[in-house]
Structures are given as structure tokens and as C-alpha cells.
Image 1 (cartoon, chains in turn brown, yellow):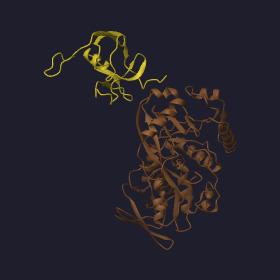
Image 2 (tube, chains in turn brown, purple; image 1 turned 90 degrees about the vertical axis):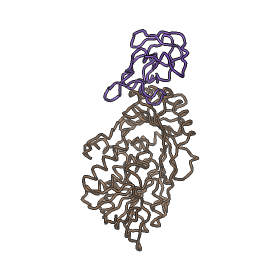
Image 3 (cartoon, chains in turn blue, brown; image 1 turned 90 degrees about the horizontal axis):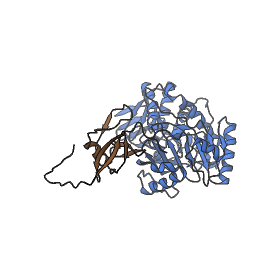
Image 4 (tube, each protein chain N blue to C red; image 1 turned 180 degrees about the vertical axis):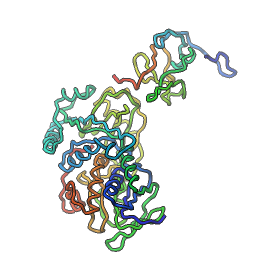
Length: 382
Length: 101
């Protein structure tokens, strides 16, 4: 295989597929998406499937809000012949300290100023929304009814199908080995299946983004770490919102199918590319979730898995060009939230590639912010 | 259907006990599973599939396949192939995924 492309997108997850779709919609021809495994094989297909507008930085709030508004109509916009399974059951964020409640109050104020309909709830009000919530030891909650759930496989498939209909070529099971440059210009992408001649590359490689940056000598200040998830057997619907706690380190949501998906982070996780499962996670997750949502203790676990968070120092994504190489675009460092920002990622990156007027100003998310030290830390991440 | 005689295995049956299936009184033996007792009473359909509501019966018999999930004494999703029969048990076919209380 030797071919030419106007744009090569590395990574067939939500970011890559959404970028390909948006570029094709704007009339770009000869777009190639390369993935070393299958579509949504990485962090997208392994994620917790939640989407929320309740963020702590203005940028994350804006990206999430517009993405969720897209997801509300994703089936129609992408003319999908299946269903992305969007369930808008809200997110109930629970606080266990007064400091955390103060942070929620700040966040809600910011969110409301951006037309996000979140609000602070008392524990009684929280219990009305999730009757099986154990409020012992909690201090309050925040809630946004617009947050929810989407099936990551089907959502990515919807972008993939739409992009394919417009002529985008997807090369799965094709690993990028090298990116050949001449000075600041990209010449070609070398894969294990042959070369692709191009001058434009998008790095949407998720957990493997640093490896791609290393190929062109771009120092990307991100690292990847494993996050684990488990899913239970299905029962009849009983929990509308995602229940999430930053201090207790957990999130748990019932999918439309009736299963419960839950996960937590681990501060001691080594920074590498492992996606293995551990029994410690199962043990700690079960203890955490049964103390907050006791009836779930009756459920059997069907399986557990892991995916990579691509972490930046401020837990916000990196979008845009780099100074070392021309036409090398970053769409990386989502810090565990790339799936929910997917629709906006595609819009933002496609506009950058084509030099169009940005529909949302993401200049503060450029890679140069790390050098300049302009970091606004996202406080609300599990 | 029960295997009464077997060339190698010997069956030591416990005492006869009564249980109910869909309100009908039936008999089984102490020490056998709920699904075995139902099978012996000619009950082959234990539940239905979630989407198309097709009949589901005794299948893997080792608690893996979810084909024998039933409601036992009001508790849904009981694996009847690995749950032992008890005197007075009320066993019902389960409609839907079961409610967690």
C-alpha cells in the first residue's frame, strides 16, 4: 500500500472519527484515518460512557456543553441507522466535605453563567433523585439534568459511518511507525502496511499520543495512566443520573440496557501504557460503591476492563499546531474526557486545518500554555 | 424426567420436599437444585429472552449462562441451576430484568 492523502489522522477513536467527519463535510478529499487496532479500540471504547456539562473551568464547560447539545441530536445529524443510546438522566455530584461543597458552589456559579442548568441540592433533594443513595457522611450535592450517557461504540460508529459515506478512508490494523519530515515539512507517514504521502497529520492517538509526538520531535508534556471500570448484570431501570464523587473517587451510572458501569482512579497507578485489570480495583470499587449505593451490592459483576487516560498537567485537552513542525495538529491530552468532547474536537481541529474562523476560541488550549505557564487547573476530575 | 439408574453413578436422594412453581405445588428432593427439580417436573421453560421474549431453559448448568435466571422467594435473577431447593420455596418465571430493591 502506497498512497497520497491530503490529511492523515492517527487514531480511530472519537476524536479521529469526528475530525474526519468534519473535514469531509467541509469538502476535503483524500482523508485517511489510521488506527493500529480497530475503530474505538482505545480509550473511546473503554471509557465510562458519561457526558457532563458540570466542569470547573470555563473552557471545559463550553466544550462539554456544545458537545452534549450535538449528542442530543446525534442520530439525526449523523444520519445514523442505529441508535447512539443517548440517555439524559443527569449527573449527581456528591460532596463529602465542606471544601468540596464550596468548590461545587463555585462551579455551579460558573456553569450557570454559561447557561448550564446545574444547581446545588440538599441531601434530601439528592435522595429524591436517587432514592437508594446513602447520604451518611455526605455534605451536599450538585446536579445537572442535561448530563447523561451515550454508547461510545455506537457514537463513534455513527461518526465513522458518516465519514465513510463522504469518502474518508479508514485503515484499521495499521500501525504508524514513523513520520518522515524535511525541515519543518511533513513528507510522509510510514506504517507497517506501507507509506502515505501527506503534508498534514492529526495526532488523535489518545493514550499513545506521546509516541506519535516523539516521531516528529515534539515534546508533549502528557503521560498516560490506566483507569479501570467494571460492569454489572442488568436490572430494570432504577437510577437516572450518573452518581459521581471526586473526594470518594468514584462514578457509577446505570446504562439504558440496565447494567451499572462504574469506575475510579488510583493515585498510585504507574505512568505507562498497561490496560490490564487488577483484583485490587474490583475490591476497592465494590467497597466504595456499596457504601454509597448499598442495593448495588446485590448485583453480580459481569466483567472489568481498563483504558488509558492521557493526562495533561492542567487536565484540559491540548488542541492545535506545534512550533517544531508545520501542519502537525494535536488533539490529545483529554485527561479522561475525550469521548464527551468528541463532537467539538472534530469541529475545532477541522477549522484549524482549513484556517477557518474558529466557532469557539480554544487558543488557550495550545501546547504553548505549558511553556508559558498559563495553566488553569480543572478541579473536577475522577 | 429423572435418571433412576445409572451404570456408574449412584444417586443418594434427600427427603422429598414441596415447593411452588407459578403457584402450583410440586415435589423435589432435598439436595438437588431448583432447576433440576423443575426439569424433573417437566418444566423445561424457565424464563424468556430479554429482547424477543423467546423461551429459555436449562442450559449450562454451572451458573455461567444466565439462561436459568428466575425469581425465587421474591428475589430476581437467581441462578436456579446452582441454587439448592428448599422446602416451601416459591419459584416464578421472571419477566424482564428484575427489580433491585
